[in-house]
Length: 575
Image (tube, rainbow, N blue to C red):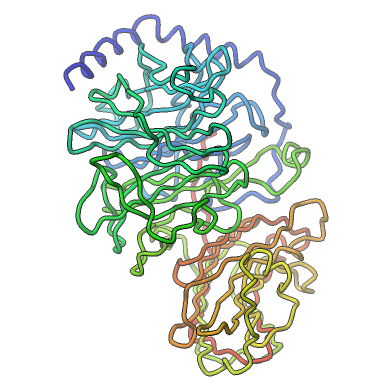
């Protein structure tokens, strides 16, 4: 590491000299670009406790990390308007991952290696808990290249000033290394191997083959491309925002460099073709630097997803303060480009989620971080009760547009009327669109109608439906947006997932975080997650309602139900 710290000393000298002038020059270039920002951004669909800037475009969460007791979120941001472009790394800090204070942009175009944009990347904690950022820059030829930045002052817990390596770009596409220069981006958090060398993967595609390109380095500055990728699959297209990390069957998280007995690894990719975040669980063969998915894993990342709704370009980080792994994800708009430009902002971050390996070893489990519960107030609890066939019951006493609701159902004694499951039903989203909340079944649909109008002309239904296959019951979880708004312009796709829960022996739990235009739902204690983006015209503010419903032929039992109004979080108030 001696060479690395020598470079740091040189870099600090550069910043104290002409580096500052370079930064100022980059801002002058930005001011010459046209802004699309309207005079006053619309507040109609803004959230109250999800992370978002006061205005303009936001997309991928970049390099979330924790340093000297503060959480840091970097994110892709357009400082000039609500559409994608002019991308910089915006930066906010928090003590609790819920309330956030804005800082100035951490990284913006100022070098040849990023003159046309500073795209996604990740933060790595080097030896001594010193942070470093690897990120994708767009060079003068519009090629995607990888760059390095480090804090100017390691004693500053806010990490306000970042300086870039004079050796940038560190990883470049060339004809010799057979890298597509327009599909070479989003370096991961690096991990340290037993041989003392750092490893990082970068997303790539070549002739429709998605790849996690592997690079190695002894000093974090000079990187060598491995002869083989960590993993690749033909026909999957571009792998954006890859993520690679260890997990165990415990909510206790693992540092990214952890290997050993009982440790599995997750490879997540954001598929550019489908805009889905898919993952596989397997083994990291560190002696060969390859990822080996579990037997039976979907060959084309078509099976396991973090979230079966609006959730993309996600990134995890290891929270060393509380020994947990936390997942961030971007929730984009379901409006047309014209409409989100008119409202003056676009994009929200999902509530941070704890993520770990299910005891079955077959999938991951996610749950909102416990800190979100500090916003709960005005609890409304309901005793165990029967939800009769055809009933719709209002949950009163809370602000339904800004709520946290947690309900559990028992159906073990009501499974005689379940509908038969057709083995050809392999696509849960398609099945949910065919069997929505208004389609009567045997056992189900039952669940919640959120962001609903009093007359039920508008609602988003999040519900379960149970089928009987040859040797087991099949649980379908749906988020039906077809009646979410009287406005016909927004996308109202219905989402769905199969839930690995046995209703004969287990309760069916559903938790939904409702925040004006976002509904994040967690089924089966986090075994399936669906995020919906909706734009009601009547169910706004105090006019929104919350209902629990059962449109199945069989009665179902509510074993427990609690709901809370959620307070506003303090998010980026200074901007």
